[in-house]
Length: 170
View 1: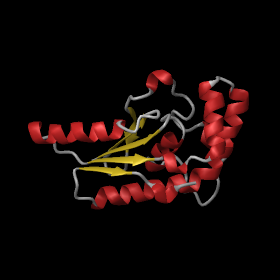
View 2: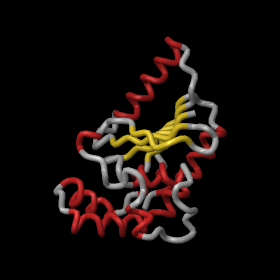
View 3: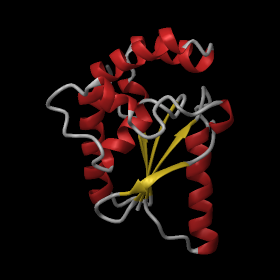
View 4: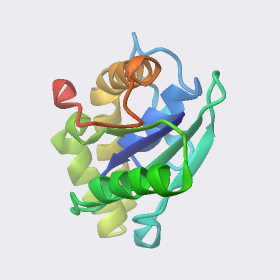
């Protein structure tokens, strides 16, 4: 099974989701510290050149690879990937369950502004504190999204599953 967390930029909530998935962050009954947030692999590190690229984060406790992807505004990226996977399955007997999990619903407004200032305008002095505040605000939602994603991954019978995660709207 392959897990792919996706959102607009692929560097904030997706990186947090991958870190929770890989047990790099503690279970979020408490808010994350600023240091924990800033030490998440790839958090606020990806650039425009990384959009559309699958970023490998590691192997989970069940031996499943975990990836992220930033899809920008293009809502067609995940459906196109799904169709390609289904074509590979049919034509080449590709037999791997893939779970796409959208982290966009968890993004609070303050994080959107932080990403715009930090990644878009390169004003980290303004953007990073907003990103950290947003990450603290949404960490529990992301943790719960990851737990639900793993649960569905273990029980789903479809070869490709696309989770929009509207239940986790911030």
